[in-house]
Image (cartoon, rainbow, N blue to C red; front, side, top):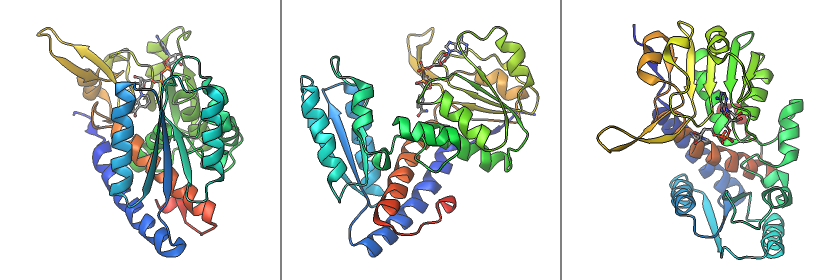
Length: 296
Ligand code: NAD
């Protein structure tokens, strides 16, 4: 029997509706909308698209977005001064610096300047540290979205054999931490892993975040496993048409897995929805208003 499809698009829409209601409640209580400042340095076309869709999603959810567009040759001290100003701004609950930054700007220094309480991407070392020790912080959007899909599908993850493929600071590492914190038994595979097929074959949960088209073969998947495919790879097929594929050989994996996310329409839509969630949560914390974060 073919695996169930995990519909990230539908899940993200429902999450956005809950966030919209909680944003309205915030505005009623605080007298202002939750606000996210988005800083875009330079004119990278992909980044422009992301920033536009983030601003639209914020507006749709009843939140304020403040966009700052700076030229690619902005000196680093000017960028850091802008971030310091946003740190101090009472209307701003979250700050997002769109990556990648133009050459000459030190990503680590820039992210480190953001107030960790406003770091809605969850990339600041303080938030990475909080996640590592199991303290409340802000968790990167994509892995938190994956965890939500897994919990929705499987409920309790305690004791499950989970495999994360990839160890980036944005996806793989925080994903592994989240699964450990959820009491799963976690393996992390990466570019130096020796026998990926064998490691995949043991896993009840596979989260693939590599960035290589269909690197995970369908035949490797353990029957009944839940597969979350984070990869977004643009390939050109035999007829010269471009299309998106994930890191998992979807059609073959679907024959053996219990459930699987499609690409597109799986993890992708979750990322922006969780960014909205993180902004909302940061706003409630910032304003000192109680929120049951687990109900979001
Ligand atoms: P990255 O390049 O930073 O990390 C890739 C990881 O894959 C590395 O840790 C590396 O060790 C591992 N890897 C490389 N070759 C491997 C191999 N042969 N076997 C096992 N592991 C190997 O990438 P990233 O930022 O973590 O993103 C990964 C993928 O997820 C990309 O396709 C990216 O586009 C996608 N992504 C999607 C979303 C989303 O919203 N859906 C968000 C972020 C990233």
